[in-house]
Image 1 (cartoon, rainbow, N blue to C red):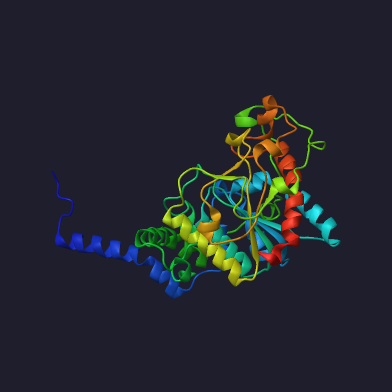
Image 2: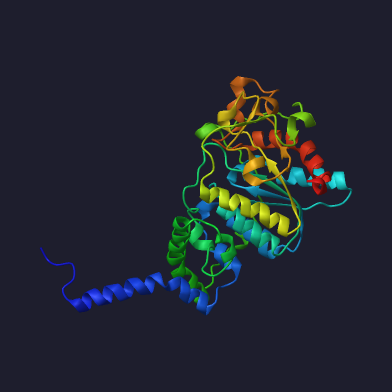
Length: 348
């Protein structure tokens, strides 16, 4: 069998190459990072509508009256134009609603998105959908190597266990070559990507044909069914608790909101597996985990879908996500609680 290395000079060359690659994040910090917009612009289309996210954070100067934060469940479940119209009528002036909701759960991604947004804008109210019981992040977000950069927002990692800091440094190593390339050739987004509007999908449940469902006559939950203050009597704790990584960034999000003088309310969106439940399953008791007295808005599935025949319940989902039918129905049920939260936001 041939030896792995033919000479000591080969060993030295390999070690030098390895050390050089591991030091690339230090090189990118020394050269200087490209604008933060570039940290997101190279994100893959599988991660969601990154062009819309770039527009709302970096190119649209308008502050948000309401900013939705979460995963793709938020994008699928909340009809943004409907919320904007209802809020405008409530305030007696044009309201502005933004949404930071890329694919896959990850409170690290949500923290970085929110920080970049609040560095450039003010949000009257942040409506935050936390990870569902079946979701659990044991490591950095799959796209973290694109938007986490050495020496930038380093305070966000303060207090994070060493194993996670090492994992994030590995992401920085992985992302460094593309970052260096972006100094020579910027990551570009097309006009269509930038101007893309977030609209609910007219898709059937797991590939089935889409069946339109009338929802205008559906009963809207009362505030005692859709607006809760701690200890959240309609919430049941289920699933595994937060990992140290998730808990770290969840608390960082709360600290960031406090630092930027914006208020947070929690949002529950019913997923397909919650059909018929008269309570809202959540990962943990958010009062203790987040040290917050923020209200939670949303309603149990049995309340949101009270007017829907059980045999047709899947017409409102495309998988775990709500489809067009479900988005319209859920948003209608959410609006009274959202307006209540907006009016009470300075009390939290």
